[in-house]
Image 1 (cartoon, rainbow, N blue to C red):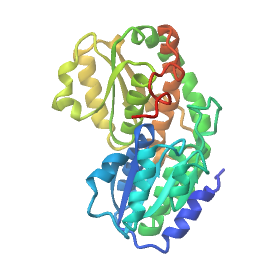
Image 2 (image 1 turned 60 degrees about the horizontal axis):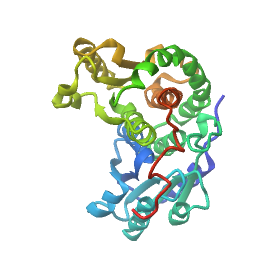
Image 3 (image 1 turned 120 degrees about the vertical axis):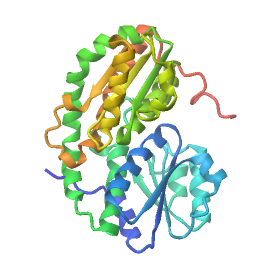
Image 4 (image 1 turned 135 degrees about the vertical axis):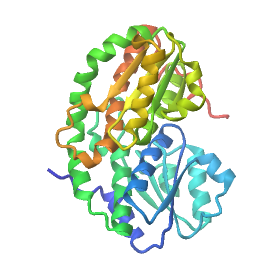
Length: 333
């Protein structure tokens, strides 16, 4: 079964057909920034015509890329649509003459009002309301990216992506069952750690980044750092000892060998009981086309890790969202 193309995506792509675009800027902050990395990864592999960059929203303005102009497409995201840096970045891009496409859960938000075209998505993480992953931010931005590749490069894989998105939520549900014993094993040990590192590469790096900064640091006050699987060997591996805790993502994209090399080193010099590996090869991905498994597995990793995070929170007697000291509590910063 193939789901229809999202209407917001379709409207944006319809407008893009009348634009001359040679550069795409992916711009956001925090968890929303994390989806921009896999979006760029997909665009890099699907399009030979479009160059792209990923920017933190505030730095996008401060850096002021000289390539930004009328031939640019700027894709921005904020879950609530109220992230002030992202709203300002949208206004900055429009002032430079660029076309802006914004993703948000709130169609009447400041971000939605600032953007040229709005793509709405659903998110369970701050609402607690379950969703179907085909309506997630990943699903929407991947449709946009592949639509760009179809228009500018003749890439004809959209139907394959849409059918894979239909199969995504069942794959996530199966992954929760598959990872449950792993999480039950590691949660008691990781709950006592002051530092937990995450590691990945390619399409999975954004999910590792988001779990590090938005879940472990923001919601659990656990020191963390998202380490690229190859950058690990260029300095960070010096922190590895028998007590160091790592969550390693082993995905299905072309960078998997980087993650496998990192795993070998972790197991060689670390302690197995402190190295939790999420391996895509252990998942039942029925219905997801092989061409898109590398792109969609990171969403499965991140979704299932939320359950692991709540296990840690319970063991630490620490509230997740409600326990935050500054996020959503202060406005004067």
